[in-house]
Length: 362
Image (tube, rainbow, N blue to C red; front, side, top):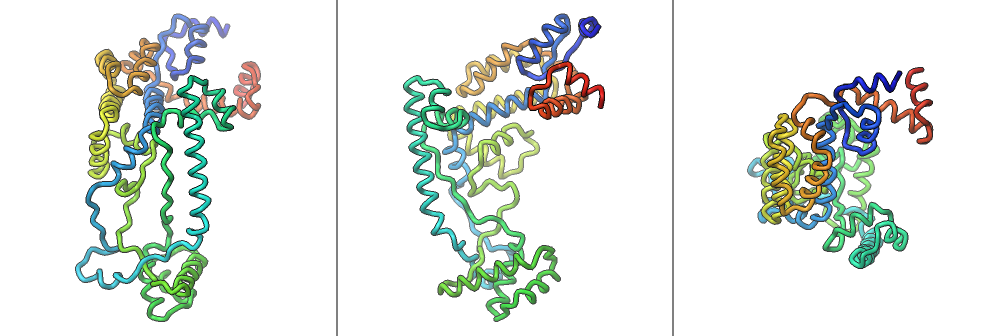
């Protein structure tokens, strides 16, 4: 009965997995298969991330514009620079103690990268490299594509909820007020809504800095707004998200960053242009442009786009239908998630009969 019902299906929307495709071919061979648009964009995002992991040097260099003008924290009014000129946040105490281990850890990663690259270039399989080097397969996949050693991560000072009140607290400290409770009440009247413990900890750092004979300082440079790129080190995931974002939703800083990035590498430029065109095609149901896009992607300088295009060609009818018709898996994603949750609760061993019984029972 279930099989007879499945044979009457005319359209089936699905993701890109081979399991779904094979299941539909077996259960409803006459149904027209439609690739879900969200999954198409998700697949593209995943391959972009893997590609951008090999371009870490370019990602970092593009985030460092030639001229960066420092400003004054919290104000741009003339004459106020003198008030905070002698202030900067005290350095973190444990910096010296973590510097050595961090350097040693990075050296181990570089040696690991050299070994993985050596085995990969010798023709070894990912599984074998993973076993021989004692690393995960995801690490092997990532390191084997890096032409340069992995850069050492730069850990700057973390943001604090007290940052907006640090200049005031420094000024009051220099005036001689070292009472944590009094200072807490003063900044609370100015809008501070967190614990007094954070204030106490900061004042402890102030006291330690003075004991070391150093000047008590706060940052002169203005804090970068949330999502700012300048001076940072964007991750592959961050940049992949910028590639996928609609052009009109990018702010000026993000546009300038992408322009610098793409100007530094032809493959990156191709990847961004083709990503933008494909995303537009998906969002506006322009399936008629798919063949032209596939031709451009196949001859692209970016290997990632050539591989992505090759994957689309293997599932061409469903992909073309997804870019042309309105069908999608959106209305049933909640049920799909529910079934996956039930299967995970059975530690992946729940068969179809048990899944059906539990889904219907609930």
